[in-house]
Amino acid sequence: MGRLHGGDMLSLLAEAGMLSARKVTRGVTLLASLDDVEFKKPVKLGDLVEIRAETLHKGNTSVEVSMKAIVMGEEVVSASGSYVKVDDLLRPTKITEELEVSSSHDKMVKEALERRAKRLEGLNRNMRFDVHDPTLGLRHRVTTSLHVSPEMTYDGRIISAGRLMKLMDDMGGTLGLKLIGYTRYHDDSSPDTVVTVAVRNLSFYSPVRLNDIITIRAGITYVGNTSMETVINVIREDPSFNVIENVSTAYFSYVRVGRDGKPKRMPEYIPSSSEEKLAYSEALSRRGMQRTRT
Image (cartoon, one colour):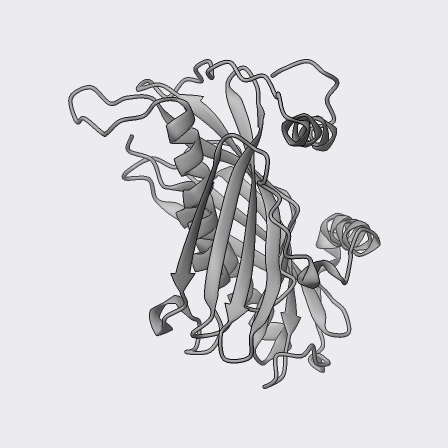
């Protein structure tokens, strides 16, 4: 389709954000959460993309970072996130470096602090121990398991957050392609496809280490006229110590588009099982919608 993959964009944003954060943390830094990511316009083949990241606030062990992708002076993707400084045992540790932010960014800092407060308010510190499968009972679901090898890590120890988010996006996109009946790509007559348009509620509860086994579970929670939402959950297993933990649970949204890049209608979807009805209702709440399909 001649577009930059949504997962690749997430990886670029996460890496840029980490580089900005490390200028302040001066140590090993991990992505803790990524606030709502909005894909405003597609990045096309041949576009020159500028990724900007700026650290706006320093807390005791974490920093708030704003990220954006710009093409020809226009913002095409926006995101914000929290990065945490950790010690050799991957425990949060104090940031001693000072951070100076221009007064011209006061509004951005205020918004970052509001997002941080909202995030902390909804934080459940026991989520890392919740390993139930949120896709059970959903008719459209896929699961895969992978071994974390050295090339998937930042430094030979911890998986790259950008790499993991790309894997998550791939799973959600695969579900979308299956839903619309995608077969294969033809250069002369490209079929419809799905594109990532938003990521919501993405937090990391436990770091993924080298040689862990990760299982990624994805299921469709909502289908509208042209869009769909998937819940994507990642768990890690450390075979050496028989440890199983929840790494992340997030919601990825996709839109079906035709060869011309314009949205097209999704296949009809009516939630039937109790699990599907609950997932659909919760998806509507996240979107701030009543029971009207968009």
